Image 1: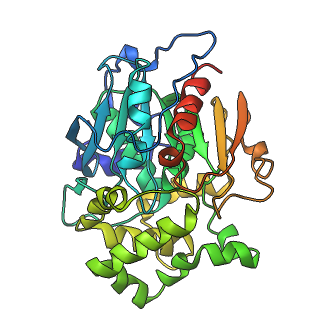
Image 2 (image 1 turned 45 degrees about the vertical axis):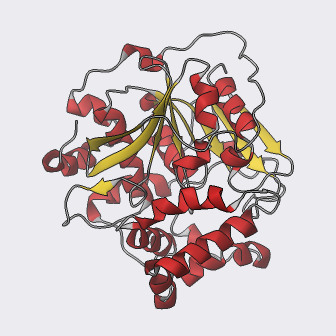
Length: 352
């Protein structure tokens, strides 16, 4: 695996080759194997059927000791599910068993600053720029000896999966990306959006202030703020308090506030990234196309879904086999609100 001493060197070199090949890691041959032909139709599951994962593990990967859930056969084709903010691995608590039942090995990591994921060194910058988070997942794949996987995510997870698919396509067998193409261009982010879209991003601007930072560092205010976001961005999701509390436990990570605040300030060019990621960020600023098989999902009731919600605003960024689906009546936390549809997209994209 990539240790702390070599991680910076790998970042500097990872411009065309994959991190795994640079590190000389053996690959699991089963990780890229999947049956061809028509995709099976998954049985419908009621959201909230499952409340926990049977297996929670830790592995040192890159700069982190990563906490992750795992389901399914150890040598099955791999699916990595990536959560967003303010969410955690429980966004996939119903998705994982559906995929495991189809023979997939499902890996669901806590992103940096969440849950049981910890930085290995107190000296490491609590940086949440997009390329750093993407490299966390590549390092996780290396640590678990996964050569290639289907990547599936939403929110921060979509952006992370998009980046890996764009920059290291050999590591991404196929992609499911909620909200489509989310790779951040800092220059473009300086331009104002239509007022309705800006209104939905209220917390991004709150986090740009010291009041917002203090709120995220305060346990009670953080709890109430994140609950408010859940309520407003998933207006049709009838979740109970226990569902929220299971995820909110992941926000007690000691680095949570720093990671969240840096992520949103960096996107607005109000916080610097690290120079070691500059080369990757320059490549991402060019908005690279994604050539791996992809299914994009839009949630009709998600306030962040781009108008007109048919995927046309980002269609040109996907040049390989492609489908787009819009889920009616669903909000921002799409995998947890519509687990069968999300899992079906994963199985289908693996057969494109």
